[in-house]
Image (cartoon, rainbow, N blue to C red; front, side, top):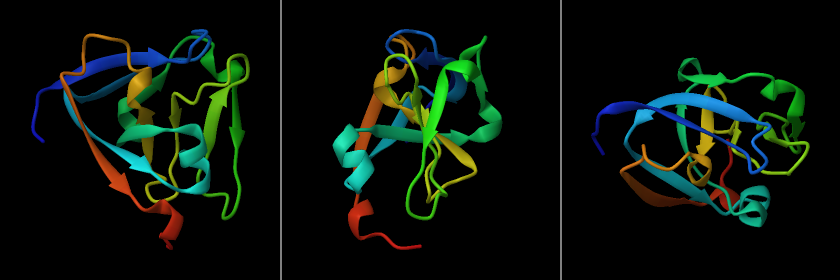
Length: 122
C-alpha cells in the first residue's frame, strides 16, 4: 500500500501519553490472535523506531507488561490503561502503533490483515 508520508499524532484516552510518528497516510494494520492482543483487541501498524517520538512528559505515565520471552513490551498508560503503542516480539526494532489511537485526520486508509500469533513461533 503506497501513500505519502505524513506526521501522525496520537496517544491514550486521558491524553497523558502523547506521541508523534512519521508514517504513510495509508497503512496496513495487523490484528493478532495471540493471548495478549486478542484480549486487548489491539490492531496496529509498525514503524521504524527512529520515526517515533514520545511527547512532553509522557514517559512518566507509561508502564510495561511482558511475559513469555519478555521480548514484546506491552506499554500502556498508568492512568487510563490504553495501549496506544507497544513493541512486538516479531519486530522488536519497530514501534507498533494502535491505529485507533491516531488522532483523526491524517490516516486516509487502514487495511487490516490478520496474524496467527497464537500459533506463531520464533
